[in-house]
Length: 308
Image 1 (cartoon, rainbow, N blue to C red):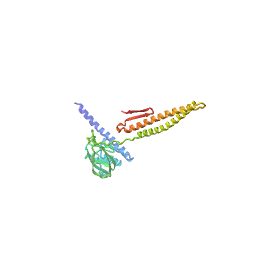
Image 2: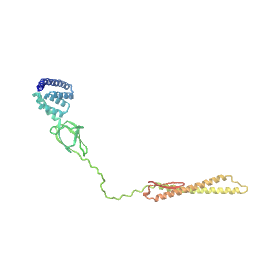
Image 3: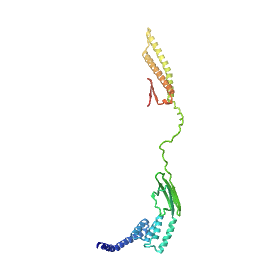
Image 4: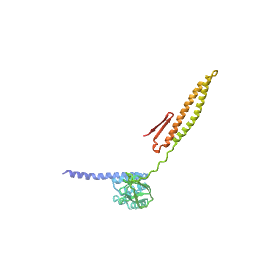
């Protein structure tokens, strides 16, 4: 039972020392904050003022943080710190400091716009310049003068983006209504049977080429037949001359070779011409449904193929 009184005595002895240590830390932080503020390092000064306020709460330290926020043009933070400094009773502001703080508070409000956000759907996630919003206790949104990018996201809705220009002094309601995402149809809707237009006739380029080529080859056959006949006549004369006494034909071998060549050429031209003409006529008689058929023709004949 003697332990509890001893602990209480030790706490009573250590408490003043702890308070003095915290005060020493707060004073050092305050000196550093004022030094940074005088050098124009307002972000560093504000951080030091707030740390000093945590060590030893003070309305004057909150006022210093408000002044640094105002210089940084972060007017919403400046307003919050000024209001807290005016409400703080520990190391309260002097009458002169209070008057200056109220004047700065009025000036800060001219650089702020207050907006009441109405989101549809209400559970949508709203960001400003890609950062989550920080609403005031009454749910409104304070924004300093400038340009802002608002973005709203919600399941089942199209993303919403909007630009907002704040000129200061606004007190408006801002409605952000999102559009539901269209539901994709899983089945095609029923439709009435519509007669299909007949397909356009396909070009008959191959058929025309076959007919023209076949006709040209048959015409060439006529010339070949004339040449073949002439060679045969000359060959017969040469043979007759060799059979007569006292006469001779020296180019019989040449005439015979020419006659055979003329005959073979004539036959090949006739076969090729007839084959091409037949192929062209057959393709012209086929319908559109037979377009998958192919025909391969050569001097030796034609072959039909079908692709599956």
